[in-house]
Image (cartoon, rainbow, N blue to C red; front, side, top):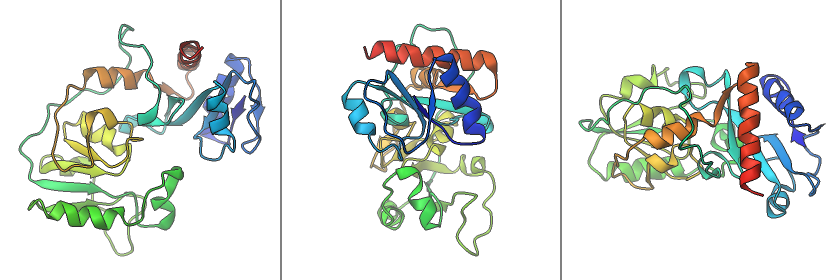
Length: 257
C-alpha cells in the first residue's frame, strides 16, 4: 500500500510501489493491517499509522533529499520513524554511495546562529513537527546568556515582513561557534560543513551528530553517519536509483520480520 500525492512525489512513489508489487491508495484511507509495507510522503496525515506500526507493518516515510545542493531532485527513506527517529539499517559493510565531502570541524567561531523555521504560523507548524511557537524567543534568550553574539538566520523562503534576504547559509559558517535548530534538515548541511550544531528535537536527520538542547558544541566522528544517510537518499527520476531504493525498502522489511 502507498499513500501518494501529485508532482515530484508521485515521480518516486508510484514507480517504487510498482517495483514492490503494491497498489496506490488515497492519503486518507486506512492502512489495512495485513499490509506488509506502507509507503507515504510523510506520515502526518495517515490516520492509523500507529496501529500499523504496532501490528508490524513496515512503514516507510519518503521526504525531500538531505544534501542541500540536490535535495529537490532526490528523495529520502525513513523506516518506522522519520529522519532522526528512523530505524537504522545494516549498511556499514556496503559499498560507498554518492555523498558530499565532509569538511573539518570549525572550532574558532564566535557566534551562535539560530536557524529559524520561518516567520509564518504555517512554517512554525510545518510537517506536524509540534514546533512550539515560543521556542525561538526562549532559545534566543537562553543563547544570549552564554555571552556570545546571537544571530537569527531565517528560512530564506519565509522571511518576516521587512527583513532583507540574508544571503547563502554558507556565509555564516566561518564565524559560527554553534548552529542551533529545532529539527531542520539544514542541520545536515551545517554538520557536513563542519559547523557544530545543536538540536531541540531528535527527529532531526542530523540528530546523532548534534548536541541536544545544549549550547555546548560536540565534534563526533561523522563518517558512519554520512554513509548511513547516503543509503537513505535516491534520485527521483533515475531508474537504477529507484531499483536501489526498492532494494533498501525490502532490506528494511526483512530486518523487521
